[in-house]
Image 1 (cartoon, each protein chain N blue to C red):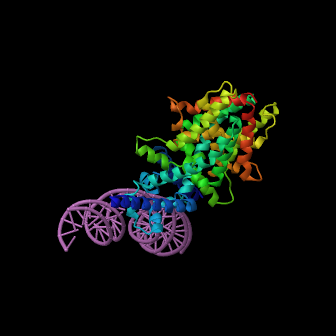
Image 2 (image 1 turned 120 degrees about the vertical axis):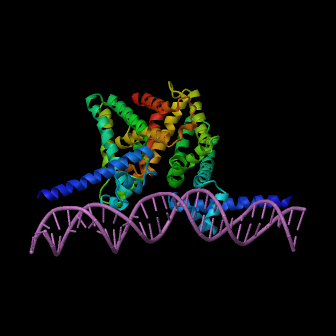
Image 3 (image 1 turned 45 degrees about the vertical axis):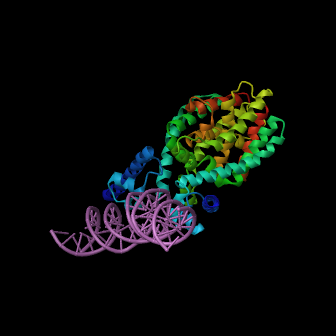
Length: 205
Length: 205
DNA sequence: AAATGTAATTGAACAGTGTTTAATAATCCA
DNA sequence: TGGATTATTAAACACTGTTCAATTACATTT
């Protein structure tokens, strides 16, 4: 029975090899400049082989975007050590922003690009698990804040969405080159400053 | 001398024709499915001709994105009738969101896609005038609010950026299909609800 | 060890993309 | 009408994602 197992393992190995090559090319050149032929060249296989391991290009980038969420979750783990929900909420935003600024292309793939979402839409049944998990973390934290008397008069779902939108908005405007309109010497700090402004508001609720 | 003028006018006419065709195809099929050959087919010219009127595809979509800002500015005009800056700020966000939801592809081009910004980057000198103009409107309104005693302890630039980010964040998460994580019956209303949550916060500052 | 069946892999093709360029057609001016 | 200028085209280039028949490699059975 060892043969079938080895075969399966080898198959997984090649799949990982494709993914690894794709990730390297993607991080270096972005999604648009990462072609199937590029990936095939890098692993020294013919382009056609990739379609025996992935349904299409979108599936590859969906897999890559999942790796991004894995990394983000890892960073979020230290949050469990913060007892006060308001402090935790603040730290969560900080980690989120830091991740986005340090991995702009990965963030792009996770929250802006259509590739990974298009893949989900084609494979009907399933939904955006990665996004769900991460948003659930935010939702629960906001819920705890509300339980402690914060955010009076607000509903959980719209408020959580709004908080997410604020940090995402800042990151995505930065990543997609829309922050040139701002009168700032250090454009790299605008997101940090914007977040400070946001915290000042949130804190008083 | 009328000849040169007519020539110039004819040249402008063909340029407009290209733009008009590009816009129709873009609105109908999105940017990815609008190819140079598509446009050429629609105006019944050869593909090559387009490069005598536009430097590249990005320039076409930059021109289109400018049309989008024209439309947005038009919608924003009624704001001058609102004397109270806080009311004006609220109305501005409403118009912004409404524009985004009614013209998702155009909004995408204006604030998310890289095409129009890439065109600016290639033509070094100039900057993002369209974005500048629109943001200036927000900045001035926020400034008036501050002059009336609102937003104490905040700086103009980061606060304005944060406000923009919040509405942009909601719109772009919606447009790029990331709002499936929300537990809502009517997903179309999530942006509206999120904005209400935002206003409730802003109002008390 | 040889033959067979199965799975992995390839290479070529298809239909499309943006872009450049040499050749052609149309137009204007003297 | 002839010559210069301009507008327009067709063809090519170097790509893209994707499919598929043919080939190679390999495990199992005879």
